[in-house]
Image (spheres, rainbow, N blue to C red):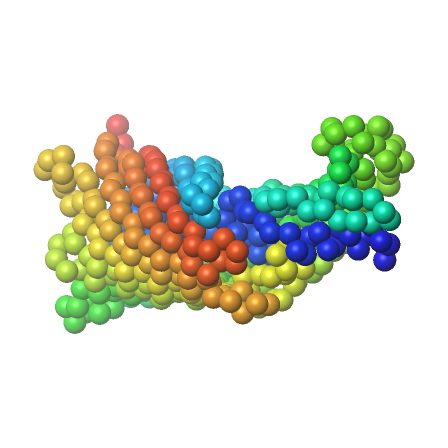
Length: 423
């Protein structure tokens, strides 16, 4: 190893760093996105439990046959995190887009697209360091950035499979990319190291819900979900040769060393079975009284592979996430007599235990949420608002991370697969 490389490695290993966006984005393939619609965010649910309206969750296809109209739905979300000395990081994005078609209150099909992993992260040294090499004093500084993530294209089917039991089957085609860049600065010269990762894979999920206890006059619905990989996520990686940014342009050109014209296109290196996620979910919906329900959920997400840490600047990956939530919802009645009857109110509390693989550290996250929904029109279009406030504890270097999320969703309906009276 050259003396220059040794200096770079030492500079990275002892520099303190500050973080932009959530530190979770830097572990493995990034932060897993569990909640991507406003109705579910209002009760802190991963989508297993009814939150859109009574007996219906937009993320749980086994509940879709309870819809009377075809719906097109989407959400926009803003997230703010406060770390260290009140450093505020904010992001906003389109949460998801979904199209659901119920058929005669017996079956349903759906198409959608939603985020699965978020890898947006920036790391930067908070001060400069000086080293003596070959009789010269060198001022060093370094930074790292990653942009991208993994997206899921979803196809779902649902129907009644037995008395009191409804089922949903979902298939996610995963795709996406991430660009990672490390900048080493020696005095006034910047040295760039860049790489790109392309992701592909597919997942399946089975959802069941049952009101079998209603046969004994117990107003309790039970929910179950099991997700597994059809094709574990593969990564095709391209590692570009480092270059000296001689003209401070921020990208390689023919004024740098080596020249852009002298570079060789890197060959893709494929890593198969880099991520194999499994998911288990259990939940209940107990009706205290008409239109008022208490709901609870436990879910566990786990990666069966141990390769993700090699793609992380933090040399670690998320091994498992245990999620708990408890909530209460006042649903709208089927026949609205006044403006308040068109509004449903919801509140929830949650706790996440996030375990890292290599360090075996536990990151605890907990918080509360609230939301309201307003439906309007003949097809019961709906607009949802949700707000969540929480905290993460156990993050290396930065300590606690305070979280705020705000989401707004809009769902519009139309009449499909309904017999019309002959004119």
